Length: 278
Image (cartoon, rainbow, N blue to C red):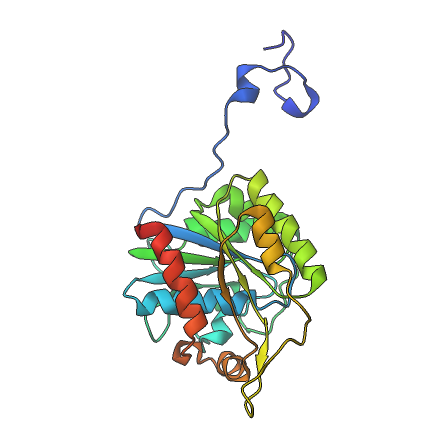
């Protein structure tokens, strides 16, 4: 260590033990909680259906007999409660905040469950957003959770970085769509995960195609997918290609996502399960 150490490694070029020691920034789980697996669901940009995919994965795992939870880390755009038809507010106990449970038994925590009105905007700066996500981990009582899915905001900003550093992620699922622009942004998400040493469990392409209800033919409104190329370049597993589904969209809008029968989502969930049970 340098003789006049200021303990500010950013301004120092010395390779001392303090610099070399890995700093564990993982936040401690609430003492009354138990979470076995944590899977982050990310996207490089908004509008690709990341929250829908998060919800569907939780629903499919719940159907397979696991107790699931969703931590809604998309604080400024929380849509998880709406998909499940939840309007009640989360309550507290001496142990912490109690998540709201859906009809099928999925535990959910979202900022919308704490607001006076679900339409109230969350106009907070980055550090407060990041602090809220940490509190969803440390202050919420997550009882006997087998799989927790973390719905992250799009991009590579403060909140995704906080989740990567503060939560013990077992891996992430990247959600994308076929547009070329999105494919380029997916590479940013992949590289961020690599920088943070977070395993990428696979990729789900949403809005991949549309099946004509009259003739059954597949149409590709967003053009040819680049997913195969990206998956090959980064050695990623393709978990599923999800079609555009008006029925699924209607179910989410009406808060009935737990009623959806989706074979593609079930296949993706089965592939994920094998990664942890093999």
